[in-house]
Length: 344
Ligand code: TXA
Ligand code: MG
Image 1 (cartoon, rainbow, N blue to C red):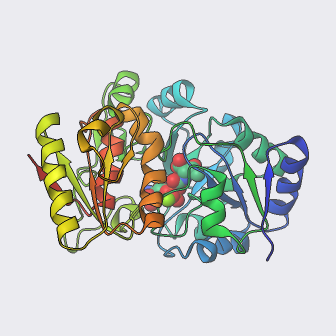
Image 2: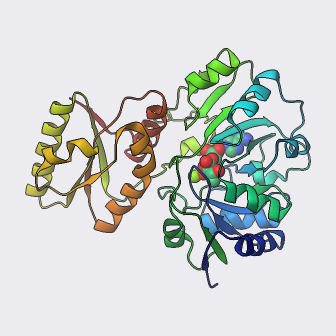
């Protein structure tokens, strides 16, 4: 299959909508990461997503809508007052809500679960694509399963060339990390995957918010993941990734030592550092993670891909505090490192 890469335009959106209606897959931008979209109501189109990604069949997809009134047909309940407050305040935006599903949603989308995840994305091109398709769009991140999520159209092309007919290029993603996934089926909203909408913001809006305790640790043996995506090694570069956290001077010193040891052992080490710390690594090979949690959110997946391109086999990364957006950053980085974290 020939893969076309086109900038977002009225014509390319029409073409993309037509392709999705016909059962094909299209890569498209959202404000979080690029998605791989299919008609959410077409079971065989949805199955193509799992094939193209190499995704395990037990990991459910998010259904994307362009207007709040498209939610009702997909779910089996009336949204709670808390859900309505979240939707009013955070949609369009980087937030996914989980509800009991209606019969309209094929079980391939939800991997057999009786709940469905729904998101109304903030990126205008994503909403325009849903409008052009006139269907809800099921879309995971547009990476091959296990690879870092794509934050540019080129990343999608790297992973999906020859597997999809069309990728829409809407430039780099603004948030850079996937949406906050919130389970709305219990007493209080519960964050299953942290993202741009923070637990504090959810608690402000709803009075309380829980965070699944598997967010900052690996699953225990035999433990059932609340969000099936949590059990897979995700976002991972090929090289061994180690996170070093602590006070800035201690971190830069520890990373310099780890880097020099790795080099002496004949490895190809690489440092991922916050912008302001780069000078501390002198002429060692280091890539910038930008500034603070927001900079790191935008850059982390691209840097993990570059680490692979360079062939780095020992990667040492700085950290940010795991609160606010930093919780989402450290969740992704932690999982990419299989939670190999050194405290200094
Ligand atoms: O920002 C995003 O959410 C991006 C863009 C494209 O919208 N999409 C995305 O999809 O990250 P994906 O498939 O890579 O991640 C979806 C996550 C997975 O961890 C999955 O297990 C979880 O949402 N999920 C989906 N449906 C669920 C459900 N019914 N119950 C629990 N977790 C669910
Ligand atoms: Mg994903």
